[in-house]
Every structure is written in structure tokens, then in C-alpha cells.
Amino acid sequence: MPWFPDRWRRTAIRALIKCRLRAFGMTPESRRVNYMLRMHDQCSDGEFLQSIIEFFHLHGGPLPSQIEQGKLKLKESRARRVSVVRRQMLNYIYQLNRSAAANHNPDECFIMGTRQLLTPSIWAARAAELNIHRQTTRLRSMPKKFAHSGNYLISAIASLYKGGPYIEQFLENMTSQSFFDQAELIIIDAHSPDGEAEVIKRYQSTYNNIVYRRLDRRVGIYEAWNLAIKLARGKYLTNTNLDDLRRIDSIELQARALESCHFADVTYQDVFYTLDHTLSFDEISKFNFKTELPLVTAHNLLEMNLPHNAPMWRKSLHDEVGFFDASLTSAADWEFWLRCYLKGKTFWKNNTPHVSYFQNPRGVSTNPDTLGMVEIRMISRKYSGKLTSRYLVMSRKSLADALDVNLDWDTNSTHYSAVQRHLALLGAGRRVDGISE
Image (tube, rainbow, N blue to C red; front, side, top):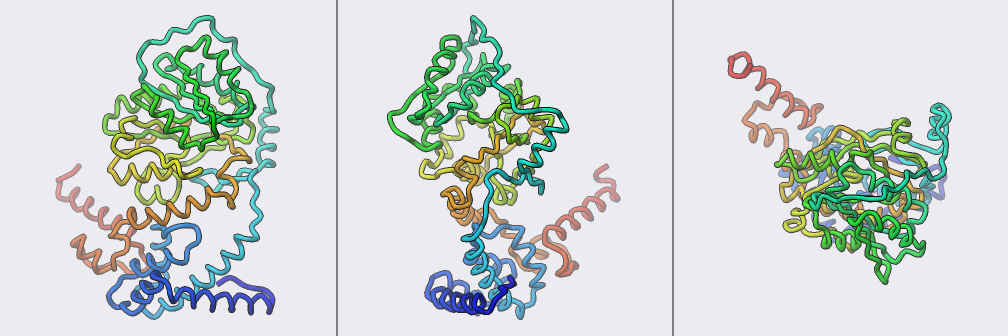
């Protein structure tokens, strides 16, 4: 339970709780929770937690990890459930207050898949250690001729708005790709005021596989992506952010993965983080601030926006799954991957980090008060129930019956641990019998 230091604050909080409880008592959600409380002998701890967390959690739907942790606290004791509701209510009020007063620093971020915080001071210290400092633009001389193969295997799509500081390095990086003669770069200019067209046309004079479309209105990133997808001639698609960089063989590695792994629909990889967009990919990689993205599973996909940055996917996915939801501001890619997973699509991870991600402090998703965070909560609530395994919310007895095993694990062990243990025992038994060596 959070601690409220002064008497006035405690009184105000109690009043808010009473008001919220009265409002809560009249909602459909409350009727469901009350039903759960009345029917506590029939519902499992997991089902109870799923319903309670879904209503009270500010940051989205109930995550599988929250349900597992909650079950360890309840230990199938019906008497503990009322106190859980009370704690969730108090925490709900505390989070409302805390969110309003949060002091968010868009220059800082946690590197995805790790607990490592990256700050400007940490970055500066590593830069001094490596003797790598901010650079002026360093560009290779543009070749006089470029011969495209005529085979459009890859379409790299980009949304452009206020990309003036990044456009030159971006184009240099993309046209240097080892498979660029089998690719096209489609840039949708969302009525940017920075005049990037002059630079783009200079590159188009050499590279006839750069497609540039300037719109007469401002559109969001996902509407721009959808327009680019409709223009795309490639078998495979990848998104390219203007402030990110790729290793010279990046799109080649991705395309080869999808060509050789016919079962895979999407390929993704770990990425290097950077706080300085002027550095080259090789310089950024030396800092080694790298994600540790897990394999895509239903539960991992609910926990974070996998496949994260610059994946490649089969264009044919859009025929079956649809396009990106253009009504969303910054989370439509995550929502699209969730839809793909529900359709049974396969994600394949390349363990070679060949993309760098610029933590842009002016990015849409870096501020907790933006629509991006609201979208994340909405998407989490929409998909958490669909992707949370029904086995996770079963009682211990129901799970044991479903697995046809003895109910011989206690309430201090999670369902996941119990299943892993029985799988290990099954494997050991098969080895003893000589079935699998």
C-alpha cells in the first residue's frame, strides 16, 4: 500500500476512494467484479485477478506476469481476495496522483529487454572512454552510375516530416545497402516544411529506384506507411526511420532470412541505441548499448512492442491481416504485430544487431502524456484477454487435470514453473526408457 505522508492528503485520498467506489458500483465492470467476489468458490485465482486488474490497472490490460505474481500472493485463499481489491483500489488512486505529478525526462530511456537506463551522462561517459564525439556530416561521393537489377525483392518505406537534420545521412545510408540493387526506397513526404525534396531529387538523379511522393497535407506516420505499401513492388517490406541507421548488409540479412525460412512471416533483430544521430553505425555499435529482445510469444508480445525497430515482413501479410491502423499515432505497428500473431503468423529473430535506434527526445512516443501512451493502454486492454493463455488463469487442480498429472506442486510455485518441471520429468522418463537419446 502506498504511504501518504500528511493528514490532509490521507483525508483527501479516502474521499476520492469513496467517490470512486460509488462510481465503480454502478458500472458493468463493477458488476462483473462483484459477481467474481460472490462466486469466489467457483472462479480461480487467475480469473479473479484478470478481472480485478483489468478494471484498476491504469497502464493497460492485465499482463500474464502480473497474474502469475498475484496468484503467488493469493495462494488459493478466498479470504485474501477482499484485501486484494482494497490494495488495487488504493494503488489506482496513488497511480492517478503520481501520473499527474510525474517528471518525465525524454532524454532518458530504458533499453528494451534490459533494466539498463541510458541517460545523456552515461552516454557522454562512454563517448569519452571510446574517444568518439559528435561528427559533422561525412558522406561518400555519389557514384556516377547505378544499375538496378530490375528485381524488386525489397521495398523500404519511409515517412518524412521535418527530416531536414537527417535526410542526407539517411539517403547515404540506404543507398549504400548491399542489396539496394534489388530494392526500392519509397518516401512519403507528409507535407514537411524542411524542403528535403531538393536533397532527395539529387539522389534520384543517380538512383532510379527511389520513389518520392509529396502530399499536400499533413498525415500521420501510419497513413504514410499504408500509402507506401500500396505503391510497393517488393516481395518484402521494411520500415526505415530517417533518424536511424543500418549496417551495410542490413536489408540483405533480412531478405535472406525470409527467403531461406519459408515458415517465417516477420524477421527482427536486436538494435543498438544511440543518443547522437550524427555518428556512423560502426561508431554507434562500439558503445554497445544494445537491446535484449526476447523471442516473440503471446506473453512477450503483450509485455513490449516486439519486433521493435526496423523489422522486415512479407508484403502478403497485408492481404490477410490488413494495413496499419492509421487512427493511431505511435503504436499502430505494435497493434499490427498483435493482429499478425492472432492470425498465426511466425516471427523469426536474427541474433545479429544490424540497426541503430536514435532515442529522439522529440519523438511522439517519448512523452508519457502523449496520445502514444494512451494508445498503448488501449491496445493492451484490447489484446490482453485474447493472448493470455487459458491455462494461466486455471486453478492448480484444473491445470493438473488438463495436463493429466498429479497435483503435487504447492502454491509457492507458478503455473509456468510447474509445467516446466513436469516437462523435465517427462523428458527424463523418456531418456530412461531409451525412447529419446
